[in-house]
Image 1 (cartoon, rainbow, N blue to C red):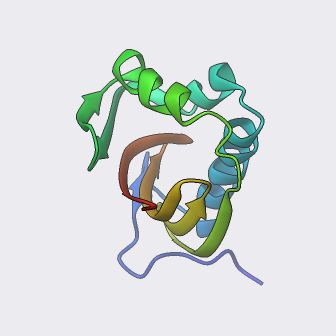
Image 2 (image 1 turned 45 degrees about the vertical axis):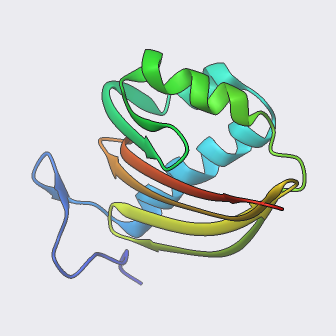
Length: 124
């Protein structure tokens, strides 16, 4: 079976980006995040990566993104409620202790997270 590709054909270096390649980056990223390994987590970003979060604004580059992810810690009680990968894009909804609803969208380019948006609704 051929790797699944997005119909609009996101490209990196002239090659179609597969959902499988994107998912591999996400799997590595989530394993490091849940283990609290912030150094490995940060390897998934570049100095040009953009991180946008409803509770903190916009951060550009590893140095600016790191504090957001370090503050998240291991996300106790983290549970993914839905996720979808298509081409270079990954979307997930989740919940964790103290967080009623979370959602992230990540765009992966050249094996790194180029853009990530996060929206969090804190539990009351």
